[in-house]
Amino acid sequence: MRFRVHPPERLTGEMVREAYLTGLDRIAWRVETSADAGVLTLHRAITESANLHVPWRIEGHGMVTVSSGCLMERPEPYLLPLELARGTLSQLRNQIWEWQAMGLHLSQPTRDRLHEATRSLARGAVCQDDLSACARHCEASLRHSYEAGLLLAALYTDQCIAVRRRGGGRLAAWLGADLGSSLLDEPTATAFLHTFNAANVSICWRDVEVTEGSYYWPRSDRQIDWCRAHGLRTVAGPLLKLAPDGLPDWLALWEDDFENLLTFVEEFVHAAVDRYRGKVDLWQCAGRVNVGEVLCLSEQDKLRLTARSVELVRQLDPDVPAAISLDQPWAEYMSRQDVDFPPLHFADALIRAGLNIAGLVLEVNLGRSPGGTLPRSPLELSRQLDAWGALGLPLYLYISAPSHTSDDPLARRAAQRPPGRWNTRVQQAWVARCVPLMLAKPCVAGVFWNQLRDAEPHEFPHAGLFDPHRRPKPALKTLAAIRRAHLR
Image (cartoon, rainbow, N blue to C red; front, side, top):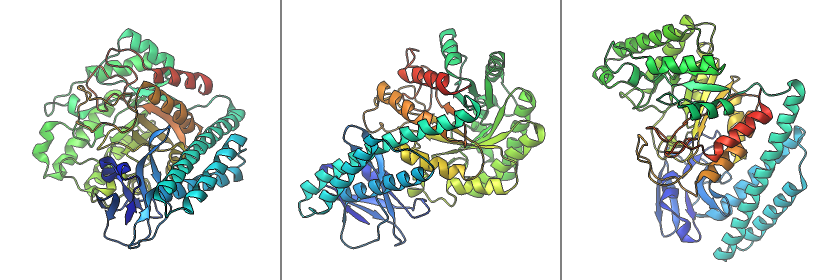
C-alpha cells in the first residue's frame, strides 16, 4: 500500500519506522516500510483491506498516532493527509454516536469542532488536484477532529465519574507507583503518601538471586514493611519478568533446557510467595509475557512459564488475587516481529486455561522506542481499554510518559529520543487528561506510575515523577489532585 505525503518533508524517518497496518480485528500485520520521492510504501504478504496507523504531528498538539479508514489495495498511492483526516473524523463520529446512545450529553464546543472538521475535510476532498490546498484543509480537519475528541473524552470522563460516584461515593480504585530499586528518602516518602493509596514493590529475580540458590531480600522486605506500616495497598512483582533486566545472568546456562528452566522458575516463585504470604494485596505473577525476547523462548514456552507461575502462586497464597502483565497493548511491535499471539489473544488463552487469574496488568509507556507505546488520542485509549475490558477481568494500568527529550545517562536501555515536544508541562497535561479517563472506566481497578525517580538507574528516559535532583515534577501534583477529587 502506498501513500503520498504532502508536503514531502512531513515524511520523516520516524514515520517510516513506526507506520503499520491492521485489519478489522485491529491486529498488526508484519510489514516492511520504505520511502521514496514523498511516497510511503508498506509491503506485506497479503492483500486484504487495511487501516494505516502512523505518527503525525497535529498543529498545537504535537505528535499523535492517527489512523486512516479501511482502504483497499490499489496501484496508485493514496493522499496521506486526506486519508488520515477522513479516518480520524469517521472514528470521532462513531464514538459520538456510541456514547450518545449511552446517554452522553454533547457540549456545543464539541459540536462546533465537529462541524469545522467536517467542513475542512469536504474542502480538502474536492481540491485534490491542488496538493497544497488539499493538505492544508486536511490538516485543519485533523486538528479540529482531535480537539473535538479531547472535549468529548473530557465530557465522557466527567459524566462517567459523576454517575459512578452517585452509586457509591468516591471510587475504590488504586492509585499508586512503583517504589523503585532503593528505599525512599523522607521528603519523597512524604510526597508519595500524600499522592498515592497503593504501591508496587518490584521483586526482581535478577537482583534477588544473583548467585544460583542464594537469595537477597532486604530491599523488598523493607519496602513491603513500609507499605504495611502506612496502610498502602501493595502489589508485589512481577515475580517472573520476561525481559533482559528481569532474569539472572546464570539462567542463560539453561537456555536450551526448558524443563530445568521451569524448575528454577518454580523455586524462585515458591521462595518469594513463602516470604511475603499475607503481606501483599495482589501478586503480579509474570510480567511482559507477550514481548519478552529472552532465552530463545517460543511463545508456547512463555505461555507455559506464565501458566506455571500463576498456578504456583494460587496454590501457595489462594486468598490473594494473582495477575499477569502484558506490554504494549496496541501490539505495534507485531509489525516488525514474527509473532503468533497478539497480547489480547495471549491473555485470552491464559484465562480460558482456567488458571483463576484475577486481573490483567497493561503497561503503557510512552516515549521509548523501541519497546514503548506510540502516543495515542484519549478516544483511542478509551477504545483500547474497552477492548481489554471485554475479557471480564479487572485491569491495572502501569503507565509512564517522558518529561524531556534529551539523552538520559541513568536509563538502563538505549532508546531513541521521544518524538514531539515532551517536557514537564506536557507530561503533566497528559496525566491530567488521561488518568481520570482511565479511572472512569469500570473495568480499571488501579493506575500505577511505572517509574518514580529519575535520580536512580531506571528503565524509561526522563519518565519519573521526581527529577534527577529529587525534585517533584508537576505531574505528581496533578496525580495528588486526582486522588483527592475522586478516590477513597
